[in-house]
Length: 317
Image (cartoon, rainbow, N blue to C red):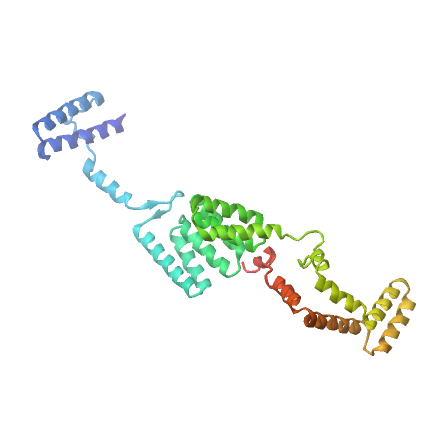
């Protein structure tokens, strides 16, 4: 109760000061006098009771509180001054400049320093995620995008960059959901629309049970007339037939296989069966290149277009 009286006394003291020095109209002064009487009655306080006076009057306390309001306070209690905020922005801008010249590691350093000053800025996390992606650290990009989204759930760019990172980790189904969310927040963004279509197409291209371990569609190759024609020509090659016969015989009868392999070796001398097999493979590749260069280029494109796996990205952390 004592604190309430001291607060009431400070208010009454302030109102009296306004009566004496506020330059108020007669009506306003009359209203203040009524207010003072009400406060004195309600809190049983008198302006003459100086034992209730604080070391600072109400105006001085208000001025101090106003100064404190000029700083931002982090939820966990970290105070951010105007200087800290300005320096963090400067560091972010410098990081952006490093991104323009493709100095991604330096950009990450600047964004990290900005986050040390202002750890609740979603833009800094999102920018650092972009730098991580440029270096192939998609797992790091995902973590930073998660932080950005937690800080600002309506930050469309964070969802878009999360989609890119997940796509690079071959997590196309998850990427689709993040692209959709990005488009909900920014429906006119053509980049999000294009990336969404690419991710949806990638989902359809997930290897089927008939695919080879390397990601090639065996069923598709078997249905390719050019590939089947070249395979037929190779299998009609006498040398290959002889070598394959030796290998098959060896699987059932090691002695017979050895004899057949020896016959194959005498037909076309080579150090051993493996060398003959390599030679046959080389001939097959040469025939494929000569007869159907478009198919070879298609296979090469498949290899080049494969996105890095999640395990590869972990090496960059």
